[in-house]
Structure formats: structure tokens, C-alpha cells
Length: 351
Image 1 (tube, helix red, strand yellow):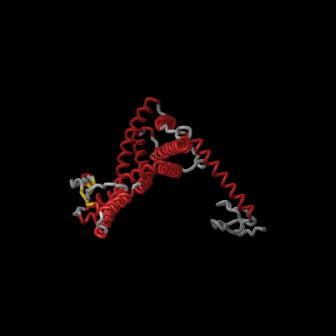
Image 2 (cartoon, one colour):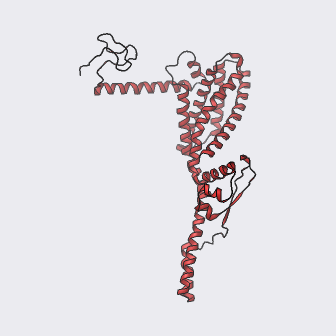
Image 3 (cartoon, helix red, strand yellow):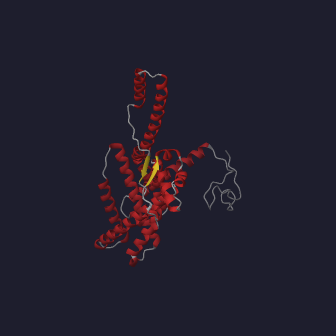
């Protein structure tokens, strides 16, 4: 197909000299916009293999502690993926694998709590209807043999279960966290399974906003089981993303004499967490494939990687590096626990 050149680039509208085949500004080919199948295939293969090459180069450099961050600030940034993109993709991969590997456990916990209570309540209702039907038929068939047959029929349907007689359920919802000492609440079993959460709060006199919020959301979480687990774990990636500036501040304080920029500490945090996510993702996959579980090995591997990364990137002696490594880990643990608790409370409030 004969190409039709133009005097300006169709992509960026930069002026083109006569006969130009490519734009000197953005690099796009100067054509009438149509592409042959061959050209499309060539562009696809070029993009695909360039993408793979960039991935392999980034991951191979990341595997060496501290090397990717050092390379990034030595002027070689184009061959590697952006730190934030690496962090988000690897974090999303880890959280997805973690949710898949632990979702069944959350589901079983839900079935043992809410669903077991629901099944018991339905059993109460079923048994009540059968007993009422038996008593009504007993008047029509007063013979002892007929009564025995009806009793046997009810027993066959219910499996001779003798369900509990208690018709109220105590919900151990401690509301002190929300500024209230209301303590546990006893709710009629029928109300629990027939009324919505907001209606229950109104019926049982929870007028205080925080009490009502804690009560309603606790019930919703109890009923949802795996759904809340997935909702909460999805928010942890954004929690970790917001933690990165805090960790950069910690590193900035620890290395305040080294004259590193805040952005350099931030990139270092992104790169080390990317390695952490990829390593944990690999272990989760290994655990699923061959039932190999070695979280202790992972913790040791991450600790060694982070220590060597700090030594390589910041260039201090081993003694100071080990000391700052210990301080950074303690502060990280405190920040992580507080952030995780805050994420849980916010997730529970808006679920």
C-alpha cells in the first residue's frame, strides 16, 4: 500500500519536512493512518519483546539488594519500570494470591458462625411447623397407633433433633472502642434473622451514633464473612502505599547527614517492598503447588535483603547499617500495626 505523507504529524501535529517518513518529535510513522496487517504484526511483536525485555531487566536488577535503586539514581531510569508502578502491580499480585489462598478459611469461619445460627433458626421454624401439623392431625386421628406414626414422621423429617429452647442470642459486641460502655446486647432470635440491621438498632434502642454504627456494621461483617475479608484485604494495598511516605520520613531522619533527597528514600522504600511482595507471592504459589510452607525462611530472606540493600544504597559501615536497620524495623512495625488497625476500623465503618 502506498503511503500518503502529510506536512504535519497526525499524532502531535509537529511540522514535518517534505518526504519525511517519521516524526522527529514523537517518532510516529508519517502515513495516512492506515496500517497493513504486516505493519500491525511488526508493531505488536516489537512492543511485546520490548516489554518482556524491560520486565526481565527490572526483575534481574531488583534481585540484587539495593542495585535497582542505585541504578535508578545513577541516570539509568529508562530501562526500568517506574517504582510506583512496580509497587502497585507486585502488591496487587500478592494481595490477590493471598485472598485466593485464605478465602476458603474465611468462608469456613462464616459458616461456623452466622450460617450455623441461621440453619438452627430455620430448624426451629421447620420443627415448629411440623409439630403444629402433627397436633392438628392428632385430633382427626386420635388412635394411639396414628399418634405414634405421626411422631415417627416428625422424627424422620427432623432427624430426631431436639433443638435448643433459647429464643434469644447474646451478641458479644463490645462497644467501648467507640466511646460507649453498652456491653453485650441480647437479641431475640426471630428479630435477628427477620429484621434488617438498621431496624434492629432502632428496636433495641441504640440511639447513640457510634453505638448504632458499631452495632450495624458488626452485624453486617458477621453476616458477610468472606466478603468483608476480601473488602478489607483490597484496602491494605492503599494502606501500604500511604505508608511509603512515612517510611521515607523515617529513613530521612536516620540518614539526615547523608544528604539524600526525600524522593530517594521514597524510591528505596518502593523497591524493597516490591521485592517483598514478589517473594511472598512466590511462596504463596509454592505453597499452593507443592504444599511447601516456609514463612520463617521468607522473613530471614527479606531481612537479609533489606540489610544488604541499605548497606549498598546508603554506603555506610556495617555497624551503623545494622543499628539503623534495627531502628527502621521497629518503627516500621509500629507504623504498620497502627495503619492496619486504622484500615480495619475504616473498612468496618464503610463496608
